[in-house]
Length: 284
Figure (cartoon, rainbow, N blue to C red):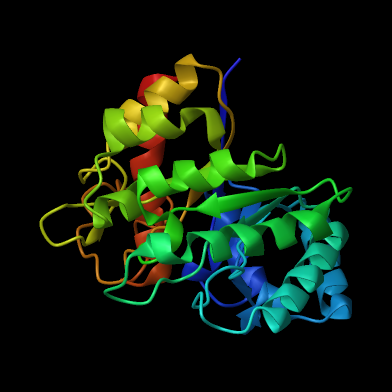
């Protein structure tokens, strides 16, 4: 049976863990894709600090859906050795947090150059990630991000098919493909569906690539979630609102969490939650 589990990049609500949990709880969300917390990226915390974060989350009944790491979000021409060390630290964090998924990228390409020139180096670096992950009970999730090797559906497919690893899967991010002028549905989805293990919920429009709530853009959010539901998807929909300057709060009603809040991160997050719940309610 299909099941959509909501999670969120809670650092778009607030920097502090307590506030993140307070707001998510008001929306009945108990999972966090943790990127930033308490003033810095999770992967830059010491293991002792991570243990304290875990303790506070356990007290409130929260868990991580994924570590929203920056691994792979450096230039392909940058020195890889310190980055691999950061990845090893991230694996230790995942173990402490009892977290199955790590969000990752496939390196920024030099502007104006053909990404195929760097394909072999991308593959080799990912094979290094795979080698040190073996036996860790962790799944490495590749996110389609503008400007990296795997920013188009075709290069995402090339990476995932070439690596051919049971613990390397794909994130489908609706907005990121729109911002690369790719067609999400049916083209991108049908190409990548066998590799999709995780969803990032944000939407965007082709005209100027600005981000909007789910279902308000050109990302085919509803169509793709319907397909996933029909095929038995049982996993996370992780809200990454990116509604930094969004000012249309018409989705919120007087009984909505966040309705009475002043304009800010918490209220914009409430819009993002309402938008995806409206879509889910029509599917499930």
